[in-house]
Image (cartoon, rainbow, N blue to C red; front, top):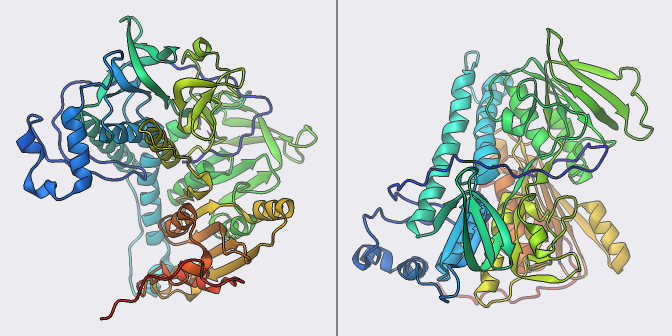
Length: 575
């Protein structure tokens, strides 16, 4: 999940990196291994030992990509230089660190990954993965509870109910399964998993260890910081993990409150409002800015509010700060004190809100303190590690720190699991001798509500601001899900796709989608931006009928570009 808008009245204090000892380093079997959270998927045969005959079976030999990985695996353990213990050490085994490690092995680098908690990081254990399990439940509950929707299909369904513990177990079991698969994939490729908290001692030297067990010092030709983030809690808010909770607690679904306040209406807050209202809770949003969903394109946000907020048991306070939140105790409910975000005066007519529970969804803070950054003269900026466009760490004097990189939430460029993975892969490409700069404007984001919201590139206000500064014209094209056959067959015609582009060149500046499976549809647009494909070219692409992908097909075809095709269409082949 992406971070939400912060409601803090003051700067966030650094988060202390505590020591964990839950990682199990026992030798595990090596079943099929996977990449998750937007990463590529690779399957390997179970094996008892890493011998040539088992690795290069005829079935796998035909896949050149697998051959590269297996060849790297066969040589993994022979470092390129006897000076260092490893070619690469990654601090943090979340999605970013995992993705970087797999790509590093493919490139023939002897790799180790240091993890003080459990493999998978926030995404797998306390974020993307378990939240999607809860949202899968909420989606089915909504469909079963919507009598009109079911009758439109000619279906009759009895009153829907749920087992809270069963729902919670579904989320926990999914996280456990994915975590196990990620761990096995690292071990299958020969990546050393070093248990403990990692601390940098010098550009090519670090130590790791658990409290009370001593530290081990190792050297590496290059180091990647991939320590991620933790929920950010503004000052004045007391989190007890029971009635005042963060997303970490909410994902355990230990109870479903009758009335819950959600502080922050970004991705995290919206997704949990979808879950809680589907399970019967009433929700009150507390948002510091003047409108809900401030990070979304305004037109998409307005439509989403009409569908996701207004018809549901949700009310909201905008333009207010939650300055103090006191957990429920002694028979009293949760107390939330509100002030006007502009005047800093108590919000009238009701400056105190009493609810059964409060979820703090004000974003995430980088998990970077205790890394030993002072040993390489690096000063964080609001807790984030400063980096350049190639993820190279920058010291307090503005100079690059040799051989040290930082990816993911810890650098603050784009707090998304798949962005972290993409940054890690970009770094490995550089370490392998190929210059690579990641285009962050091509990285999509999604909110998994029902219906979903997705976006890539610039919002319309951002695009207009850019056009005014640089002196070019922009145009906007839109299509509705109401015109899509597949959406109508599903009785899911509520939705909109929006394209922001340059009519003079056909450059795609941004695409925003609200509707059924929007999170899946956005990738055609994000890949087009990444590859530099212009509107006048992509409109010739063929989409299967009837599919939801035709929403984007119609969107690109409706755009009016002043130039002809910039690239020739593939040569015609006689049939």
